[in-house]
Length: 433
Image 1 (cartoon, rainbow, N blue to C red):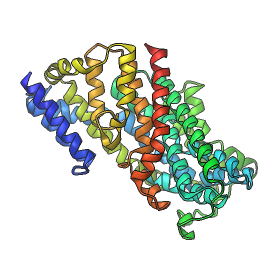
Image 2 (image 1 turned 120 degrees about the horizontal axis):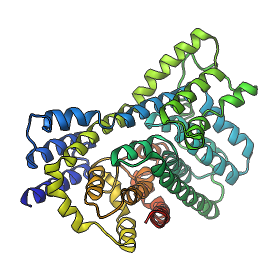
Image 3 (image 1 turned 45 degrees about the vertical axis):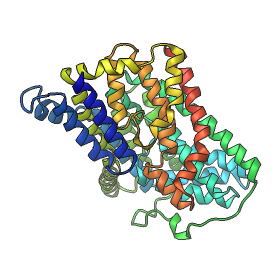
Image 4 (image 1 turned 60 degrees about the vertical axis):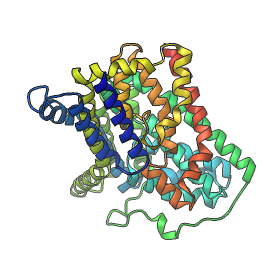
């Protein structure tokens, strides 16, 4: 019991170090893994030891997730280089004309679609440097434009394939079950964003001011700038973001083949000769993997942490403690995750990307709740983490781009997303209790 309490205190300490930005999440996960293993009494060597089971097996435990992240990032880089993403955004803006609210809604939807297929800060910068200036050019105030981008990132990540794949792998749940919950959370985030956009529009009307330089709208200048999306081939190329999602959700393909099909699709419809297309495929592969590397690295260390926590010795110490705080009735469960949702911010204990992954596993190991319910609690809280957390690099970049304080953005948009998180939680719990 004493060992278990020491482990909990150690986990809380590392959580506060992450929240205070005294220790990067990646380093904190590594320290947590080794610390929990040593305190829990896992031997250094042997089949179930730290070197073999925790570090070696743990590093590849999330392989199916981080491989998906890397290949999905490749698809995102390909859509960027071939101007598919940029064309989708500009077509939506042209369709909306000078109708501010219509353009805002259209660009919000397109941004969601792109963020469902593209991962990483580079992708957000690529989309944001086009979307935000267009929004402001039609009269959206810069603060609202930044929030629209962040809410699109949140909804897109939930609607995409990489996040549910990671959660399904981490918690040992079927992807289809996780994806349904993720889509419900995405839908609630979208509704919250539409309410937020409408309120800001009614309150502020049209505003014309922008701080970013004109050069900021140009993301990438290289020898691929002559790609032009037009005609029938252009129309087919712009269907690229739908391909992986449709083939996974509707046709029931495995995730990797669906993403690879998306790659083949975009290269086929934008091809400018065999040799040049091959060179572009290789170049975007390298760039995409670079964009996906931070997420992949995080998953490697989360895999190690889960191995340490899942060890029979450690879980035997922690499960009795976890069971004391795990809500077992429907109302208590909803109130627990709904009211404590802000603990998913600042890399807190209720974010699935970090320490929360281990806590979720412990809740499942206790056997008091069905795994899908634990999954629903953590995914619903992810609504706040992906859209509002000031420690997200994309939140920091958007805030800087529109010259706003990142914490101010969090405070003003969080109430809307918190309500969305709570509604999504209630729906998912009722459906799965």
